[in-house]
Image (tube, rainbow, N blue to C red):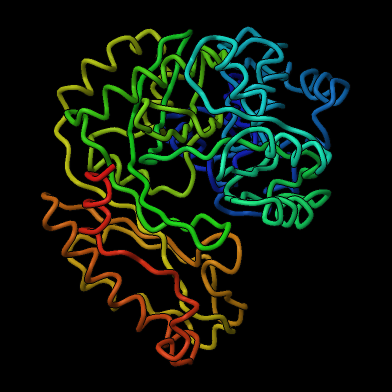
Length: 445
C-alpha cells in the first residue's frame, strides 16, 4: 500500500490533453482527474496514471465549491486544464487553492470566441473586426454594414472546427447558422450564440505556449496548409517552424501580447494565428494543451515539447525563466503533421492494415479514428478526418519525398478498407494541391 498526500489535479483530459497525466505520473506524482463527461475510470489508459476521478456535473459555483471541499483532503500542488471542457472549471477550482492560477473570471476570455478577440481590442493588440449574437437578423445586419465580402462564422463556445463556416453571402451565413444553432457541440455544450468575424487573408500558424506567473515560452510553431471546399475549411498538413525562421520571432512577440491581454499567466495555451500583410492576427486561443499531435515526434524534432515543458513548469517552476535560453540552442529537424483523407464514403469492411505505410522512411506514427465495421464518411462531407500521421526528416527535400509517398499509399489503403474503387468516386476527394504550388502561393502573397 502507498499513500501520497500531494496531488496534481488535471481537469478535462480528453484526447487533447491526455498526455500530461502519464508524464507527471512517470515523474512520481499522484494525479487525480476531474471530468465533465462520463467517467474515464473504466479506461485502462486512465487507470495507469489516475489515482482517483471526480465527475463534475456542471461548472456552476455550487458544484465547484463542493468539489473543492472534497479536494481539500489532498495537498494540491497544481490544477491544470488539459482540454477545452476543463478550461472554465479549472480556473474556478484553482481560486480555492494556493496554486499558480489565472485571475478569477478570466476563463471567459479563454473560451468565448467574441470576448477573446474583444480583450485584444481593449488592450490595443491588433485583431479582427467582429460581432456576435444568438439572433440571425443581428448577424446579417452586421455583415451588410461591415463592408467585408468574406466572413467567418463560428459558435461562441466552439471546439475543433465544429460549426465553423467561411461565408461570402447572406445565404451561406444563414445556412451555417440554422444548421448549427441550438445543437450540442463536440464537447457537450449548446451552440446558442454565433460569432461573425472578418475573414483574415494570409498564412495560417499554430503556436503552442506554456506560462508561469506571466512569463511565457513558445514551445513550438506549426504552419498550417489548408483550403476551402464550399464553406468548410479542409486541413491538409502542418509543418514545424524552425526557431531561426523569421516568422518565429514575429509570432512569438505577438502571442506574448495575446497571452497578456487574455490574462493567461499560468499553464498551457494553444493559439491559431493568421500572418496577414498587416501583421499577425489572432484566430483564437485555447487555454489548454494542443490536441492530436504525437508529442514524441515533437521531442525528436526539437528536443522538447509543450507537454514536457508544462510538466517541468509544474514540478519546478523556479527553473522556468531559463527555458528560452535552453530552447534557442536546441537543434531542430523537420516534422510534418498529416491530415488523412478518405476519398469516398462507406462501411469499413476490412481490418485496416497499416503495414504499407511502413515503407515511408520518415513515418513516425499514424493513428486512425475508425475501425472495422464503422461507417466512414468522405473527408469534407463531415467533421474531422479519418486519421492522422507524423513525418520526421533531416531535410525539407526528404520531408517532401516522404509526403508524396504517403499520399500515394493512402488512396490504395482506403480502396482496400472500403472495398470500393475510389478512382470512380474521386469527385468526393478534396483537391490537394502540390506542395510546390502552396509555396508559390505563399511567395505571391
